[in-house]
Length: 241
Image (cartoon, rainbow, N blue to C red; front, side, top):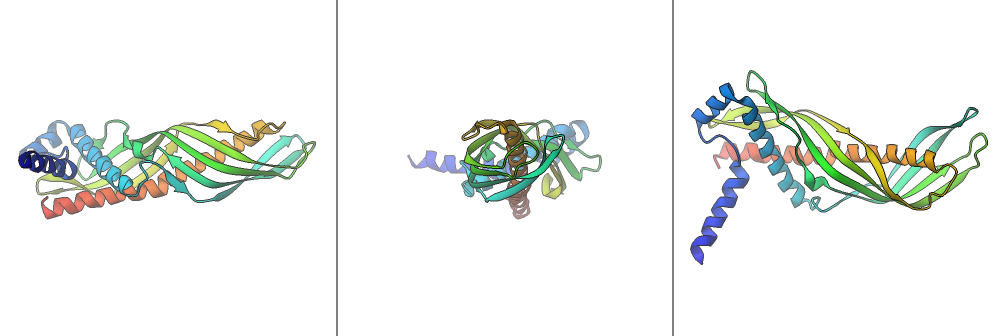
């Protein structure tokens, strides 16, 4: 009973810290000259794995609470009516951050100093209580509506470039060089109390506002966890683990 436990712990330690990296200098040099894409993918996959560990440590692999927010956006109701509608959310949470993965093959620049690629989050949902305040414009009367809403982003992409360096004959990520977030499309899965002549206008505003919340979260909180993962890989490589 004792021997299998020791073996399991050894496999986990190696898989987490050194997963997918070249075994020696010959392997690293060979991939750099013959197949740098494989080398770039190894780096990106290691970053994803390390970031997912940090996401799990924070409890975000299940869900993440989002700060309350208020958004104001201009609307054109008719040819004579233009107005700013206010949309606010409370009790908001996001699910799907734990889906972080590599989206496609990465690339390594000619000097072997930067790995570039695209990461993704899939089937990310945001649920919240909402309040919409419409002050009225043209022939449309003022109204305030509140309810619950859930939106879905099938994919959120992160175009990322990471500075890398050779440490102990292994290509190791050092820090984030660039980081750009883009969302394919956001759909409303469900919304309550939206039986209004202005429902299409309200829904357009909801999609726009909550898409921004999803992108902001990816551009801040998710980026922090990716960076923490990179720093963990860097520290492990420096210590020779």
